[in-house]
Amino acid sequence: MKKYFFRILFLAIGLLVHLSCSKEFLNRTPYDALPTNSALNSVTDLQTALNGMYSGLKSVNLFGRTLPILGDLLGGNIYISTKNSGRYIPYQNLSYTVADGDASGIWIDAYNTILRANNIINANVPSSPVVDNIKGQAKAVRALLYFELVTHFAQPYAVNASGEGVPIVLKYDLLLKPARNKISEVYSQIIQDLTDGYNTMNGLNVNSSYMNKWAARALQAKVYLYMGDYNNAKQAALDVVNNSGYTMIKNSDYLAYWANPNPRTDKKETLFEVSFDPVNNLATNSLAFFYDQTGYGDALCTGALYGLYDSTDVRKQLIIKGSSVRGPNVLVVNKYPNKPKNNDDDTKVIRFTDVMLILAEAYARTGDDVNALLWLNRVATDRDPSFLGYIDTGAALINDILIERRKELAFEGDYYTNFYRLNLDITNRGNEFPSSARPFLASNPRRILPIPQGEMDNNPNIQQNPGY
Image (cartoon, rainbow, N blue to C red; front, side):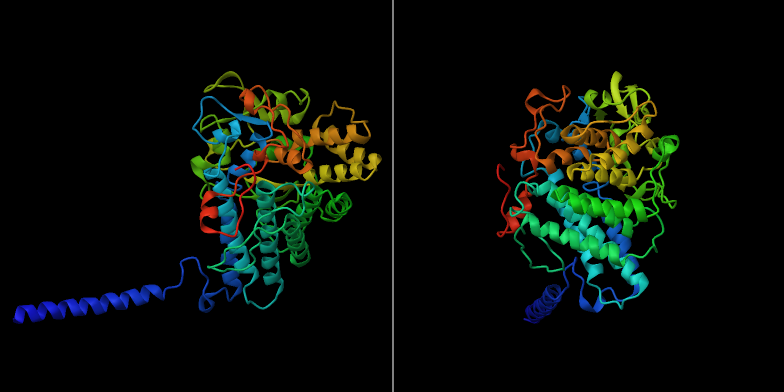
């Protein structure tokens, strides 16, 4: 009887402990919440959170590899070698589905990093030059990520500004299941964040791996370009080229510029980049490793792009003919040459030369061919000293500008999105692609990515893109 009593007592104590633990579990703060009693309360807290936000941009799904790869692969600047590691094959073949892990990774990691930015922006820390600068950086980064999201997951602004964009989330809410905002609303939020960032950042940043007011203004010029708002694109670009103090990297320094793996402090060329170093890098998942022939080396330059460069164009020297791994006839991208040196090249997000080409296009599209040619030829004749310059006008001039964008920003993820923003057909990605995937017409549903299936399963308020 005594044994039975003690057994019952033991079970009762165990049940009480279990109930107590269960109650404690139910009262726990969600792992990704930011409870008010442990929120960001000081400049030190904000700085730590800022570093975490920038770390989010380094994700392999964002600027670590996928975003720059897709921009060149979908457009036809690069292709995936037949000898490959299995990455990005659906994008080679235009066969990606709602289950695609790369599309899902962009969505998830972009929103995770937006959450980090939101926590900084909403922190209850008294205003000061340092605090304002930090919050300005967070707003510019949030704008950058929404720009990438709306570009990859929604129709072009010029096609349907009132169409389904992406959800705008500006503060942490564990239970939120947001619907998609209109494309025009997303762009308005981006412009507002970049304006706020431009107005509140104040030159306290250390180097090009941190956002600054001129990077925000340059990004704003690019966003206006994607909206087809060429007058505002022109004004923003002019502000950068006239007032920022940044300068274009010249021909004599061009190769050294790309050989340098470190952030810059000299205001030459790089307005903002996502930085990696020998300690903080993606190792075998990096962008450089995907091009490096001693790494995966899967991504190779297409013949169509290579053929655009004259022999005297300095940019052609960043493409090497022949590989010990893939044979003597392939074209190897050498824009990210530091992986064999145990370092990772930074991913350029916005460069001064990009702004010059935005300015050239904005002038051309507002009827000022003289100034358009001026800015276009500053780039073209520097990169190829034997070239006497473009002389076209009208539609032919705009085509020249787009070709120069392709040549200058190759392997930086810019190319495909020009077809996207202008709703243009890609009639032939190149003979390196399967015949069925050589044309990539504007009517193809895969011109934008699918909303990830996981998001669809968990959020009844969101709608899938047509064709998926």
